[in-house]
Length: 302
Length: 302
Ligand SMILES: NC(=O)c1ccc[n+]([C@@H]2O[C@H](COP(=O)([O-])OP(=O)(O)OC[C@H]3O[C@@H](n4cnc5c(N)ncnc54)[C@H](OP(=O)(O)O)[C@@H]3O)[C@@H](O)[C@H]2O)c1
Ligand SMILES: NC(=O)c1ccc[n+]([C@@H]2O[C@H](COP(=O)([O-])OP(=O)(O)OC[C@H]3O[C@@H](n4cnc5c(N)ncnc54)[C@H](OP(=O)(O)O)[C@@H]3O)[C@@H](O)[C@H]2O)c1
Picture (cartoon, rainbow over the protein chains, first blue to last red):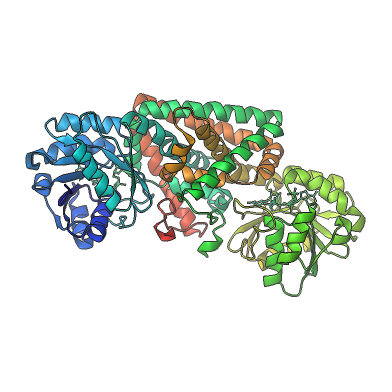
């Protein structure tokens, strides 16, 4: 069975991209959409982010066999409760939230009678809102599905097929493992970037305009990440607290060792550490999750 | 007076780019070059990184009125001593090192009789070696010149004109201030990136291949920076220790506050911090030190 009618709740970067990707890649599939913000709904209609944009969440999901919640993690429970009156029995409820344990729990609380299969497409940009989405966002990116125990295998299979249809490669994982993996590959990098950009902008003896002028030395790559949506990221840290704190403490331990090496002038330790990290970069490029063109100097962007 | 013969010592990313940029932008100027590594000299001849590549450092600088040392910061003193026998009186000795106090001191020690005017073009990529250079590396980038007290104004002016000729905008700064500014905009970002990539590759419960697969969530931007040359960066941290430790401690203080906010579930504090950093990003884009195309999702790279 494949999904014939997909409802999208939340029409920002993720929701809008799903709508555009379905239109491009799965032409037989109907889409409907809803967003809590009337201005977003208006813009979504102009851009055609879904076939029909409803003004009421229950109307948006009526008749859908797959509903995807594309709202900040902290808004998942409210969004799920709001669609309950319109949901058809047997519909699959999924989402795209960046943390999975807490979202699974929220959705199960809000919709105890329904089939819930959470997912997380590991694809994004630092932009948000109804103008940010594009149809190829999921191409060559991973989508992690975290089916709770007892999820109907046929429906998990359909959800896998849906994401493959949008260009993703699908991986099944349990929610707990997902949250630990993403803490290190995404949440901690964002936390660090937000923090160092904050530190740099509060210095007295180095002005903000100096920080901006000389950002090509490495800092600007952090500012890109630190320009991500504050609501989305606040919610991620509130909802993946344990894994984030655990990974943060490991990072702090390693950073304290680096600090000691610098203090002691231990060049050998630094050289060894800095050599190791090159290998990881090479493998990311081999796996097609980045390309080798230097962005730092951007001679390809001129 | 403008320089008519420029000698480049060290023919990797920076030295090679200077050679190619002079050929493209300053066609009347002669270049000669030298690198300690015979394989680099051979490759430099093939690519034409300088008009003549000498096999001896003193020969490379004979007759030059500007010599630019493009070697790792820790090799500056040895490189300066090696050119001494060939240096003509009145020649300006400059460099491109990423830290300036220690380089100024090394060069003054090695060449007490010569005019030394250190500089640092804030432009680079994570690549190194004789194949990495390209003529446009310095376009629209800043070059910071840190003349010591008593440096002849006419020669400082000539060096400014030289870097403008290669496409840079020049700023004059004292070495101490340079080292503090670059600690925050470049050195600390590299230190953090090297550290988190190291932390991620040593985890037991999250495999390396998972870290690589799901790197599109933010981590891959750190791996790019952490792929930079280990010798160059070891030398930077050994040579800009005080400013780096000072900035690192401020970052650690801010990160500890973030940690507390996550632990306490203080969403308001996080939201405020994460909102502030967006403004900095906007200004970097306005100043042309980055562009707005999202690299994180790379839909423009497909
Ligand atoms: N951005 C990324 O890189 C990325 C990557 C993977 C996964 N994710 C996840 O995807 C989800 C959406 O992120 P996004 O980047 O698409 O955010 P976004 O562009 O800000 O879009 C979210 C939209 O949902 C709306 N909304 C909020 N509460 C709602 C509710 N109760 N009912 C209906 N609509 C509601 C928001 O309206 P208001 O603005 O008026 O609140 C906004 O228009 C988040 O859970 C995030 O963790 C994001
Ligand atoms: N990369 C950047 O992003 C960047 C940006 C701004 C400034 N800088 C600064 O520019 C300088 C050069 O960096 P780079 O990226 O161009 O490095 P690179 O590509 O590794 O080139 C440096 C070259 O210098 C050679 N060398 C080492 N010691 C020497 C000596 N005593 N005499 C002659 N040649 C010697 C090296 O040979 P071996 O490999 O055999 O040692 C190598 O070929 C450093 O001081 C760095 O701090 C770098």
